[in-house]
Amino acid sequence: KSSVHRICSGQVIVDLSTTIKELVENSLDAQATSIEVRLKNHGLELIEVIDNGIGIPGQNYEFLALKHHTSKLSCFEDLTAIESFGFRGEALSSLCALSKLTVITSTEEQAPSGRKLEYDANGRLAKTIPTARERGTTVIVQRLFESLPVRQKEFKRNVKREFAKALTLLQAYGIISEDVKITCTNQTGRSERITILTTSGNKSIRENFANIFGAKQLPQVMAIDFQLNTESERLTMVDAIERDDNSQMEAVIQVISKVFNEVYKTYNSNQLPFVVADIRLAKSRYDVNVSPDKRTIFVHDEKKIVDVMKNQLIKAFEPFRS
Ligand code: ADP
Ligand code: MG
View 1: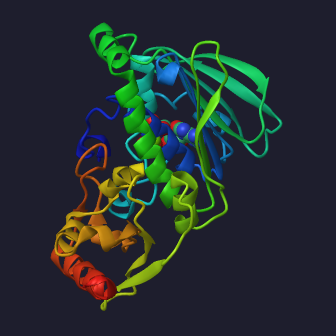
View 2: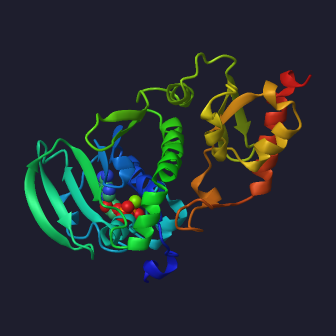
View 3: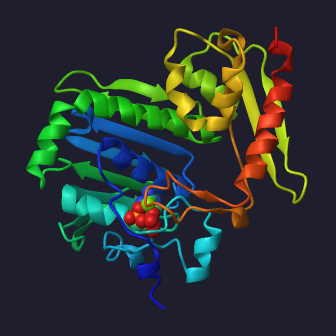
């Protein structure tokens, strides 16, 4: 009856990068094709995520930031067929408790007028102000962790590291999000706003990769199709891009699973191409309801998938065997 209990709850907002992750995922869930992450003082003062997604309809204003409010699940059965990133309704409510949260939003019908919504620490709608806004949503997080002085101190002390971690995450989203333009800018003090990261918004995963890492050329691109013989599932499009040794590409390795490392280990790694994996599975095959941040997911028949990947990878890397 109450699906709330059956959705394991936990903290989704633990630092700058989880904050940005939740907001960017909300924008992706809202079908945005343009997402801008604007920071002030590397997020210490302000984190603003501006999208051109579907916006928030008026009937949701009041509930948006309440704990476990989500517009993305209609029944418990949906938990086995999750297509959106979010489904727990925890991010905005947590952010209310940890910062000052403001939302500016407009739907197709409302644009070019919209609403500015201010929420209190309990996630209750405190103020609604008419404002101009094109279709989309802006979520503004001011003074993150202000309500947790010890945590805020730690954030201040580690801000550069937390910022770097957030960038790694945005790079990963920038790579996998085809047809979505992702930008990140920062302004420190009164100095000029600087663009940290930007993707073109109408390109393939491969080109996003080049955009983000500034690969001088995209030579020797390898497209490997991972065929799973039973259903029509595929582990599609694994692009291999020549390794550019001096870059920070290492950061993205995170998205590559153990199996890749296993295969890599058996070669002289300098000669191997870089691999970006985009794995798409039937909804029935995986369960994301394992940990709140979805960093752990359960995959049915995992061993079989891993075996397929491993074999395909070994085959694709055959030319590099010296
Ligand atoms: P969840 O993503 O798990 O549903 P959140 O707390 O992240 O929970 O968001 C709560 C709700 O606010 C979402 O279900 C959605 O309806 C709305 N929302 C949040 N961000 C956006 C956005 N950028 N565009 C449209 N709707 C949004
Ligand atoms: Mg969410």
